[in-house]
Figure (spheres, rainbow, N blue to C red):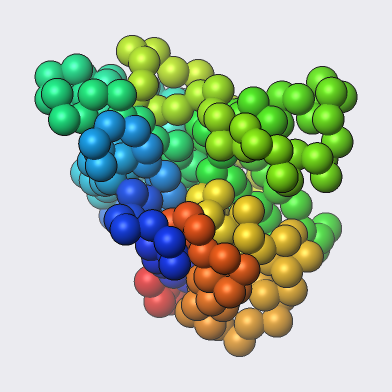
Length: 249
């Protein structure tokens, strides 16, 4: 596996409340996580960094994943645990009251990739079938699109675009979506916060991932374009490419 990850506070925000990490376990399987924190008095960065740090701690000692069911259960169990950690921290630290975070995470093995998400941070895949979004946003606007009340075009500029229906750490229990896909040589997985997906179109994403000579070039290009298009939000991404060469991230 090859991987890179980037985060940038953008051109408007004073602080970066996003966190990101890509970790390998002792068997060489890869875990990529993007978290977009929110709420409290600058506590969004606490929620997102707690999430990333706990994932890393739990992952590094993990063994081989041979079946998708194992990966799905691991992600569901760990997110349940991390959610409770973040929620309890917000309850016992007044300055963190009301904090939470989105999360999109993927376990990438030699046979499959399993993706879990809460909120509006997204996962995409580029493979021989093309480029497609793997996750469904847990947002008010996406519910309005799904129920046919507004169009996808209307959603782009809806005044309540940032209202989330689910987040990690805001309640004692959390629901999540989990999905597994086949992961093969040269497939590329992209995880990102809405600071990227709101500013870079799917066509641009596909173009950047297809044309870039290496992953670093792609990652830097994503950050540049998101900032050129306004950069109103923190911008965060992780890219994992199935490659038989050694990892560069």
